[in-house]
Amino acid sequence: MSKCYINGTGCISAQRTFDTVFLEAAEVNNQENVLTIKDPVYKNYISPGAIRRMGKGVKAGIVASSQAMQEAGLENVDAIITGTGMGCMEDSEKFLKAIIDNNESFLTPTSFIQSTHNTVGAQIALGLKCTGYNFTYVQNAVSFESSLLDASLQFASDEIENVLVGGIDETVEYTMSLFKLAGYIKTESEKPYQIFPAKSKGVVYGEGATFFLLENKITSSTYAELAGVEIINKLPIEEAEQKLNQFLAENNCRISDLDAVVLGYNGDIDDEIYFKNLAENCLKNITQLYYKHLSGAYHTASAFGLWIGAKIIHTQEIPAIVRANAIAKDQYNTILLYNHHKGRDHSFTLLKRCQSTT
Amino acid sequence: MEAVKQELKEKIISVLNLEDVNPEDIKDTDPLFGAGLGLDSIDALELIVMLDKDYGIKLLDPKEGKAIFESIETMAKYISENRTK
Image 1: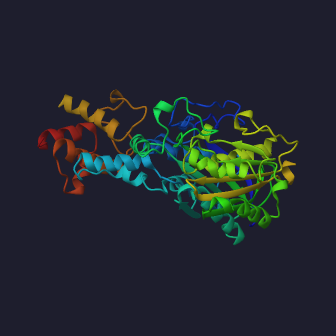
Image 2: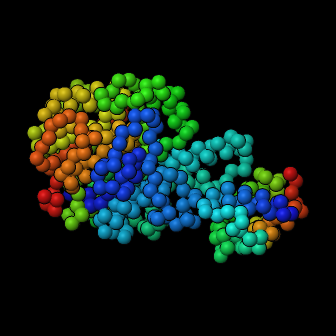
Image 3: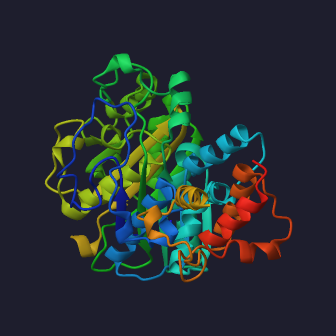
């Protein structure tokens, strides 16, 4: 993988992550089965003329990307790559509802224009007047990792020197009601909801926008090196450990080099098996962390996980609220992230501390 | 006519999602596009659909729009004279 570094981050989530350092205000909401983002004051970032047409995912994406660029000290970028599992659902629902309510007549343009999956990337580019490479990946639970992979390929081919990469998904009422009917979301009767260890099927759903400013050089704002990303769409549970070792070896690393592992525990008892398979065996001596009890589970929640990994390397601190076990290290120099969704779309992401952060 | 003007102001704020704008902020003769409310071409499409849906008025000649959408007053006058519902 071509060398690239996380030099800025921005995170809008179900926690207050836009005006805090690192989860010091975080709390677990075990009373809601759909967690919604804590909104910043969007008007501080987006003009009133533009904001009135934007869904919450677009607004959150613009603010998160703006924060990432600000941290990195950049005013424009060479490329914008976004990942989203569901796209701009708020406007999609509005448009589809209008079709039904008005018997396929009187369709207005705004919600249609704003409903496409690439709206966030497009609106960021419009705001920045960025005419560079702009791509959006819609690949379920590896949408964000697909964006990271693309970014690394852009660096490898010397197409870019910096890029905004983000994961965005939003919750909307009707779609959430369908997910509840389908059993994807935990039932009200299970309150208070427990994510880890899981007790039942279904997840506590969530939403968020998390952006990273990646550059091909280390700067004073560098969080960590993005050392490796791999997506495996199908991975039998009995092959997971072997695949993990292979991924680490390809990135000049072994399990014993890991200081922490960020696991995508989502509260679903069936999904948990895959994480436990590694956590209770080859990773049992490693500091284990989880995050979906804070962010909720959604297709690009792994971007929130990466934000946590980057923050840990940057601050060298682990908030107690994300710990899944009690193992502690003196330093956190190498962090692995592992995620999957319903036994598919597995991803490994490797972060390494680099010179400016040591 | 006054009732139509008030209704129009409320509908425009709602349909165009004009944040921090109240009906009393919009003067009857204020330009809707450009300097006044600052509406744009996408808003014009929204207003055309609103005329059709809520008042049964189909604007077939786009050139007409410029005069009709000049202000709340011109819109209200046109609606009062041409509405079918």
